[in-house]
Image 1 (cartoon, one colour):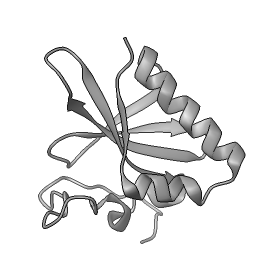
Image 2 (cartoon, one colour):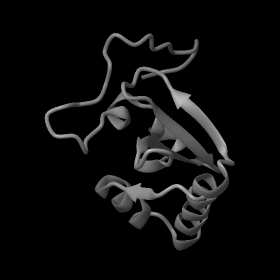
Image 3 (spheres, one colour):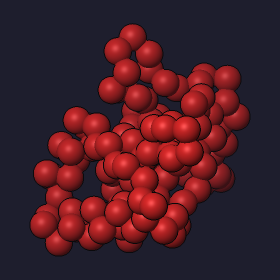
Length: 117
């Protein structure tokens, strides 16, 4: 059974900024994840509740799992960003939750050597 997919306002705006080819590819990847659970998914550290990212080429789809019913989990797509932007602190802030930035300042964020801010 397929999971339900909820696109936040920010995620829909991100998709509209992309080319038709890229947005179609991302939508198909999210649908495939919802139906079969397949995709390059990694959990993002420092978020409570946990958030994940789905890699689609150079694009990163940030999402979280939601309880929809007693058995089924839904997918809430938070943002769709290019890989160079997806992991910056400003992009990680949850803008869809009023009064809560969703960012855990106590998380252990590491920068690799040679990287710049």
